[in-house]
Amino acid sequence: MLNSSGEIAIYTDGACQANPGPGGYGIVLIADGRRQEISGGFRKTTNNRMELFSVIRALRELGRPHGQVTVYSDSQYVVNMINGGYARQWQRNGWKRNGGKDPALNPDLWGDLLDLCAAHEAKFVWVRGHADNKENSRCDELAVAARQVAGLPVDEGYEKPAAPAKPTQLSLFDGM
Image 1 (spheres, rainbow, N blue to C red):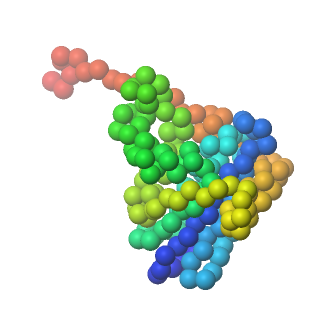
Image 2: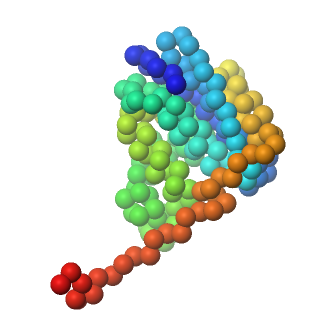
Image 3: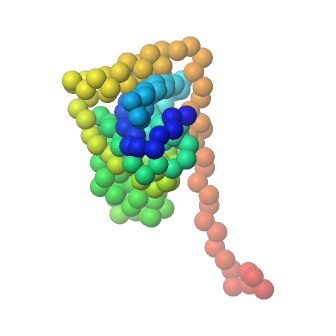
């Protein structure tokens, strides 16, 4: 766990060999001149899930809430959904998008990420992937290596998604 009294910089990346396929994530945490690298993966997942999971895993690593956390990601999907408020809107709409017509993708991860972002007051910044950002390039290396590890665990949210709860309708006589 990386403890800091100052600002924390988090770099994240996700990767999949095929989409869906074996996936990995890479994280570089920097605080008070110290750095920590984290990586892992799942046997079958998607690139977007790995991008999301990398941020979740990084924020969980911080433990207690921090007031100054900046997340750098090359995923426009993640950065735009958070900065544009779209993920919150999906949540308010019962994880529906397009005016309630379509189910939102990855609600398990978005819910976790929104909770963690609120606790840590995270700010998101998009960085160009595979460019001259040393830390983003390192995250990519970690993610690619992690997806190639034998015996990766199951991504429960992808391979075994939870069935949505059926809405209950009260009858006239309920509660009597």
